[in-house]
Image (cartoon, rainbow, N blue to C red; front, side, top):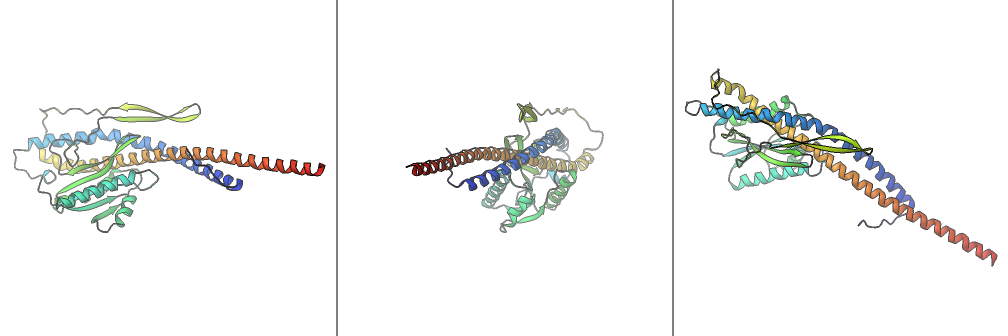
Length: 330
């Protein structure tokens, strides 16, 4: 139950106008986020089959090369002495606990690596991550990268070039992606995905070897019901074609791997950027929806207090007039 509001009529009226303006702003931000998240979700769902199938192709080619003496640097599993953490955050706030959740996970992972005696360095992606790590000089940061709005292959390639050089030069022995996995409009989970070395199981896995492949998604569309905007959800399950075990490659498998390794890194990082953006927009839409609802509730309480104060003032003035009239007639 809301607490009573005690102030004068002018103060209540000013507060009511202020809350109305705030409610208009949050409603507009909610609609903008809803329009953007649809596009971001389509990019996520449409890109997942390609990136996940690409991992399976690597796995199948790698299986054929198990008995051959070939050096594939991105598939080499060596003792882990240092880990690079690619932390993907948003560029803006007003999205609930979205940025806070991923930075908390990064802090927890860093503490875990310290306890294991493993070194670490951070590649921060996003303005919020930059401001967070700048205020914590005790965390080593290799470089800061800022997003350019909607994720592009060029932006992903910049990150891929950095992690590739770190891993191949053996400055780090493992590369992990920390981002927010988009599940639905109301569910987005921070995950840690092992980017390098390549998973030997042909799956996209987290740091514990657990698959983080998408089992299903929810598509939504904006509709109008009774003059108000509403959301309708449709369940979408990602379909992946199984690769034939008797598949043969015309080219030498080594040549195929050399050509596909940069594409693999780019696709995995691009997917993480897209998932993070979709999660950020969905979180902002939810936060602005809650803010709009709270503003409407506050407006209701302020209106009741305003009417109560006005009625009390009118009643007081009437009593004064009646008392004055009685005094004149007596």
